[in-house]
Length: 450
Image (tube, rainbow, N blue to C red; front, side, top):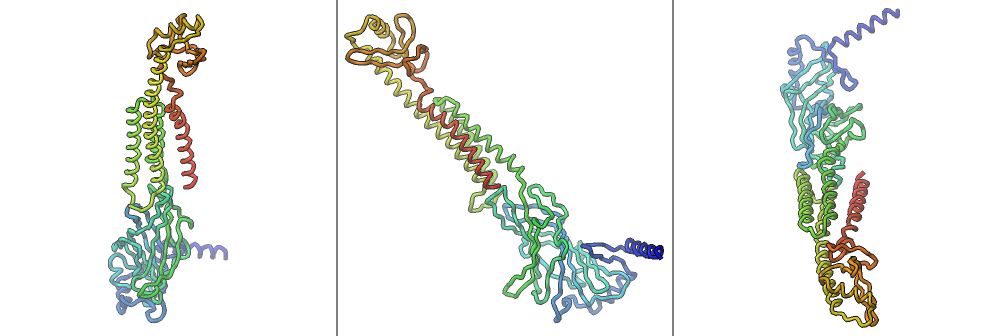
């Protein structure tokens, strides 16, 4: 008995394997071809009205839809549209096509639209809908069930929100509806198991997973002046890849901003080198900003990458302004120090002390013999020292190199110590302030967009 059952099961399995059946969505599409298929098909369609839907004047015909997306391509922000190649599979029942043949009847290619009624499904948000007529297959089962598969290319509109670009995730939709048949005439339904499948998920700029979180399928009812219609909505979530923009925009902008701070270490009087470095970095940031927006739509708001480049531009521009301010203060300091030094030397040479000691008198005489423009004075021992002399009725304080405690003052020293000037103080403050501010800006930027 057990052997007999085993033989029967084996024969049934062999029959199913060699019968040409195709399993789709856990349902078997019988592809056994009867003899004289053309003769039987012509007899079956002899009194068939291609313009009349199934169950006319009785009940709406239920059309079950499944989409197999071969691939997504050309997701364009400039035109806000995306292209998809879809195998659109539909199932419905037509009682006029019931037959008792061994196997199934099928049509393919352009003859499908000419001989049988098929649902007039279209994509409402498509800019272009292309039905490849040669890539159509319609299978007629014994009980009147219809299996229809067609390859279509859809260029659909997708309203994108680019405020977080390029750390954004876009949701694009494909909305399927009947053009002529209202809800009372035709009801659209998704298949229960994976209504939408993406065969090839590899994209250059985006990524999408074949998961419920990335693909959602819903059934909606929409109202038009012509009546209520059944609608199927497939929503896809495209997550943008960051690698391209990190390499092409963020890293260059970061390096250029840091390069502009090199002007803080250039002497304040070398205004030509500072300005040339500042203008070069500014033009580079402007080039990055223009190149990035050349392929973007002309939206009325700033994108996340725009804010980053604008902030980098402000840092570079502020560096250039700081160079001009420092140069201005440096010039003013030179003029004031030089005038003050000449005035003190003239006053010292014309001064007539009345109660100097012998030692101080010799120092004064030795110092008077030197040039008025000399920043440091040499005493009678040949040592270069700063001056500190007190007189009975008038104190004369003269500090060489900004301190009377310093005992060395080279003859080639500048009139004043630039390390203690206002221009140098501004440079030292900016060397710390700009990097810290830019680091804080980056931390805030990436934390808000994470």
